[in-house]
Length: 259
Image 1 (cartoon, rainbow, N blue to C red):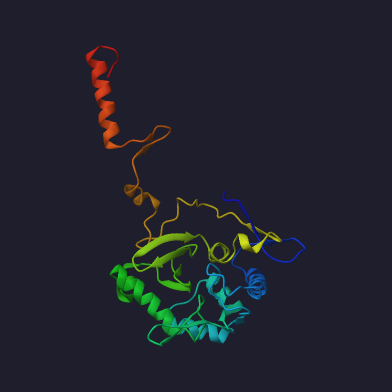
Image 2 (spheres, rainbow, N blue to C red; image 1 turned 90 degrees about the horizontal axis):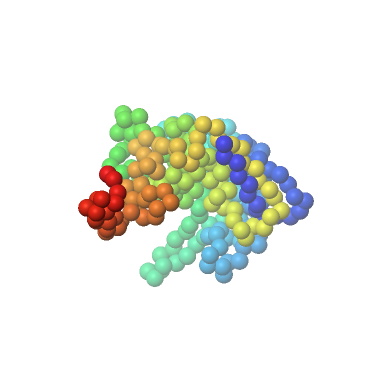
């Protein structure tokens, strides 16, 4: 049972809000983020790359959502549908000019149809980096992917539709649900403590139990990169192991211990 509490921003009174993938949750998040973005300091280099006063575009209608799915070639899971039913990218983007006088723009969220080509490009980048394509994904039963913001991808076909952080071939598990991942990415200590968020438990899973076939084999495969450890005995390095074996052999030679 996973039970967490998270404190975040905004004006009193204190409000308890359930963190789930419902339209009601995303409606509240929409209002809260827009209010927070009114006070963004453009000079804060550690702040979000969101223009001050940015607003969410209106959510997609059912007809627009259906067309979006047709353009992508698959049906969206309910969390993603509810997300886009509520909000569809931002009305402002962060722009800058590089040393070659080329104008660029950035927005962490993808709007339809404005950013459709960016969505295609992000998916193609991950496929190419991992040696697959849409045909291989379909034939092998690999979950299709979709970028919900920046390089956070929702698993279209995996049960529960978790979120992975995917940057080329660098892939890690990032969140159990879209709603939880939104809180993790877009709410932090700067948002105060006026709203208390409640995280419903995810039954049948722990953070060690999340596995996404092909994309994320699980944390057990990452342990090979860590030092070998023994509980309460610290790190057992090769040098320490040799010293320990020598001590045991010396004691055996003197008859002071048993094998």
